[in-house]
Image 1 (cartoon, rainbow, N blue to C red):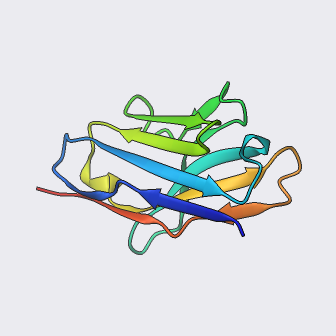
Image 2: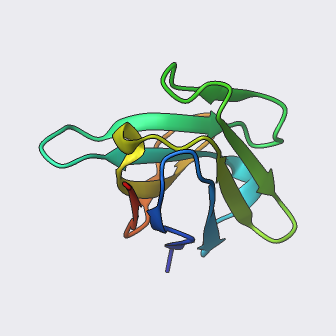
Length: 119
């Protein structure tokens, strides 16, 4: 059974930081591109950051470049999202995603963790 379990969300003031974690099980972790997505109220889910199977390449949404860092630990089967200089527009539910590489045939989602940025 595939499980992606996110943790680390919470309430933070603007300018603060949070570190999200995603623990994967039931998949061959190194065969998956991992990514973080978010969904704000009333908006569509959007890609925040992704990292290739070996961790060599990362991609970020323009809105988070220079503030967020995605990383992975293939031994622990974990993926992280370090979020710095948080802004109110970063508020939303953050989801971990695993997509099999190279075909992308298998695609899995976690249950999400809430991030709220407000004074």
